[in-house]
Image (tube, rainbow, N blue to C red; front, side, top):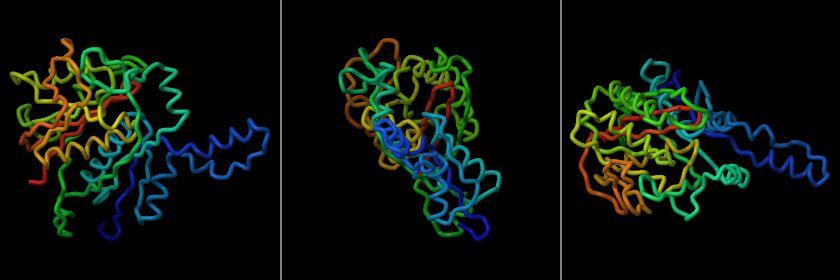
Length: 307
């Protein structure tokens, strides 16, 4: 990054709670824990440590608004670059699957009972969790050209919205998700027909997501093909938006649309062109990746190839 204007770390994470679990386990066993490492459980510790090790600047921010956290990190980074605050930003997310996290989803009866996620498929039973991380380096086109970098892809549009409908359920018509996607298209300066693929959120509210798709692409005879890569990765929570952005960029680069594995039979209530079972060859310059979270938060990214 240019001298005097270093990149900034922006990460979606809920922190690493191993130390806090150890603290309470020791208390339960009658021990007197000293609390060493508790501060490392804070979400903010991850971007702070990344900034120290890589020599990055401010702001150093952690986003922990659930399933849109790392998508929000990418949006915020893009806005910082667009407004000239920084030349570049290190944006991404990380999520670790732990026993207590698994227990929360299990007690909420949100997990699939047949050991597979089957988005948009008839008879789907829930979701599965995964863990992982993805980090992308964003920079302005001018700064990339200045240092002779060849971009791997482009973040050309982004949009955010809030349903304000329910604590955990999305708007039944997918209104908030559609709003975020429309804003992303408008920011990108693109039309509906420019989008050749949609990476779905695919966590069980599939009918609302299908309706959102048709709302966004209402001027097309049929919406673009869509798949849920969570069928292969599991739900990565705070990391999901960054991981799916990387997958979407790779899909554009390779000319292959990733599949929805585990798909069985079309749900009549989900009128989408779902990429089933195996990857589908396709050539497209732009794709949409969107995410939704508890509390009605929605975020959408329009991604382009490196051409």
